[in-house]
Image 1: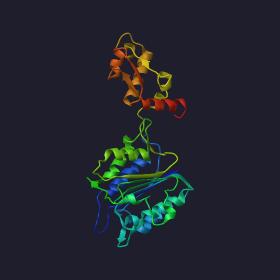
Image 2: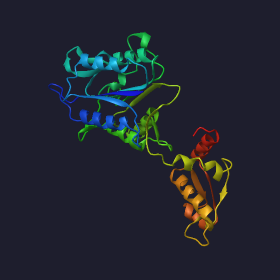
Image 3: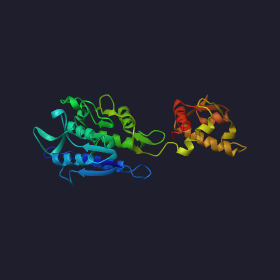
Image 4: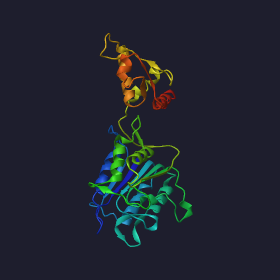
Length: 315
């Protein structure tokens, strides 16, 4: 049971936006299924051109999201954010001193659901979203609840930019979910999404914030792995020890005579490991020349990491 509430608001009276609904549709489509088509989050998507997203509507939707037990719940919001009352998600019925749903209220609802929902993800693409999970007037909710992670487009004092009809933040989050932030196994976590954002955005850009109180990183989406699992598990047979140096020869290279089918099959696997940065040739830049010139190869630190996972039956 994994469910997601996706909200995109373009149709604000007097201050419309252009990219929020497209952002909501794109991220919802990605979260619904993993790369292989298997179900992921069951998404409920609300768009301002179809739904009247008032503060009461948004509040009721959040209460429904957090009401029942689930393995994971995700809330995504794209729209205006206000810097009043320590941050507010602005709804279409905004007015002075009552712009929408306070970010603090979202966190309070999430905190109340932690005993029935294993993991809660909050993703906000709006101005001043960095207020969420920060310091509050009420000291009783000053600590981020266990199992909650928050990813925001900007700091508490920054705006969130749109470009070419889409939010800069959400565009990068979607790129990360499509594989830009995946590990060798194809797994994307909230922490990996933030690392992708952090490395992509420059010092002069809006700065996303990531706040979490997690004992385990849950998978947001599974992408195509860089190395298939059955191929990756062969790493312990090819390299009996993590620091093993594998001597190569022309027999590994399929273009050379005489052919050795077993070594050629092993070399095809080594090339996949090389592409995934799991190994490096020794004294040669390319694996091909390491074989032709009778050199060797060894696992990188990343390769040794996955070697250990396979050895411990973790994958």
